[in-house]
Length: 335
Image 1 (cartoon, rainbow, N blue to C red):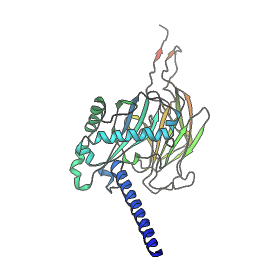
Image 2: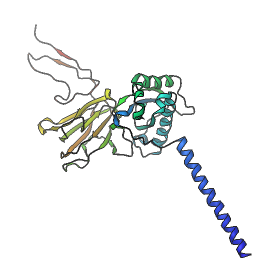
Image 3: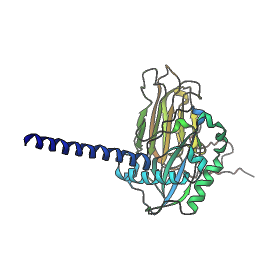
């Protein structure tokens, strides 16, 4: 009798274990095909295509919780947008064949602006398809479907506009890698490249710093110490007037050594800035130390000059002037 009970108990345990295993397998398959991991396709860098840009969202308000990738609001909105981008790309069979992933890296205020990138991996055996990845094809697809109301219903927002352009694949950071969000204030703060000030920053560094200032302010960025490998193809710092590494928003790209008498200084046109540090070579250079502070936004710099002689210069000369300026100098001298 006891043997029969033991047998029944073992059978029940086996049934439960089998059910748990099957449930686990089912859950994994649902996740894999519904969400899916980032595909790990080993392809040369020249076989990778990355498009980055931004989406302008209506019917949604920017809150401080969207400023940090760690918040639930950030994760939920990003999941919806990443699914939306995936759905859009699925409408083009060539693009979707090589689709890897879409990532939302941040948000800024005004109308809510979401910054994104999407990666495509094209194996060497399909190199002939590289020519099909053009800005016009990608942006045309995105914009046409946005104008039609997108391809996903039930969202609590609408997408007013979207941009995308070809981007260096090394800029494809995710919010869980070497990625930092900083808040500028009226006092100077600082950040450094990995390992600074010890000589020899890490090889294959892929680091980004998103800097935000108060609404209506701009960001001033200084580099009291800047010493990076001389070859800008391998190691460099890129600074953007945006939170997306779109080339059209690049303020400057720098490498080499900047002496204290000629410090690198950059000013944004608005309340956001992105700093990227890329290293592809072994180096004995220490990297950089950067300081940032929020300043009043300068959108106009009109002057009337009445002296018989003198000089004038662009804002922040000899450093880089901010984008989107409208400066007029009126020179008046005696008849």
